[in-house]
Image (tube, rainbow, N blue to C red; front, side, top):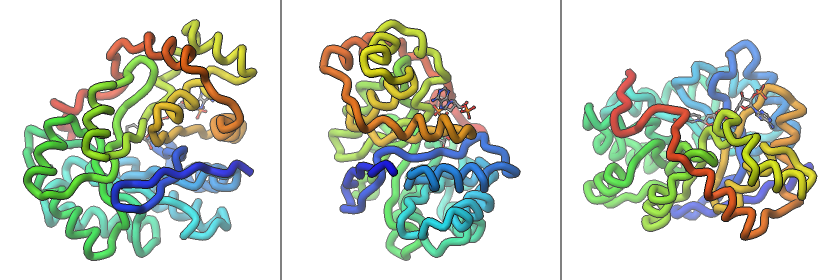
Length: 276
Ligand SMILES: NC(=O)c1ccc[n+]([C@@H]2O[C@H](COP(=O)([O-])OP(=O)(O)OC[C@H]3O[C@@H](n4cnc5c(N)ncnc54)[C@H](OP(=O)(O)O)[C@@H]3O)[C@@H](O)[C@H]2O)c1
């Protein structure tokens, strides 16, 4: 069984560096998928109200036989639930759906700057942490200006910013902005829809290490110092994605992968995304 490395957040809590996401996993298969992932050694499940599978996320946790306190559970407040009252109701609903008393991390899923409720929502999260609904609080898809704003207006720095990072969208400036504030970067869609699986720096590093392109890319995230969440419904690929702690990329391999950055998103642009 993999011994999962942990990182320490700016609030003193620890987080598994590699986690398992359940976006796009159908409710009908989520419980089995989560059970399988936990059985293989994942110790972080990244959920969200928006994914419509939080009830099954909790079922999978209980079916796995892994005790609640060994698993780091994340949820997120969706765009339509910004604002103090709705945000609190959203987190209470997620707790009930998952069937736990407290979460390990709650994130604001997107800033939705056009609504400009993210500061109020952030203050609500600060209050929810105080009330014990979650141990840590953070944000997702926040740009540097959104981070500056919530920190200036509340005095509270998020523990983590979950953003899209993959070889074709490496986000060096935003990662540096996170680091400046002591905020951990957590990579979503780390495999970048496989767009760089065939790129020479990836295939060459994979051949040298005897690993797959996906394993090289996950290792690249880990060596950047990021936390990372990956997803597979296939138990063999779940295991493959965990098997990334017995090799290292050299400095020159890391530098070659850095050249693959095209600034190309797989997902929406957070500065304009406003789906409710
Ligand atoms: N905060 C946000 O706005 C946001 C946005 C997107 C995602 N997320 C979170 O981040 C998590 C990870 O992102 P993601 O779901 O896009 O994950 P990902 O790991 O980048 O990609 C998952 C896709 O890659 C395939 N895959 C997985 N392992 C593979 C391997 N070893 N070789 C080849 N293909 C492989 C999977 O197919 P199979 O299932 O067939 O293996 C699946 O189609 C999400 O599940 C979610 O929790 C957050």
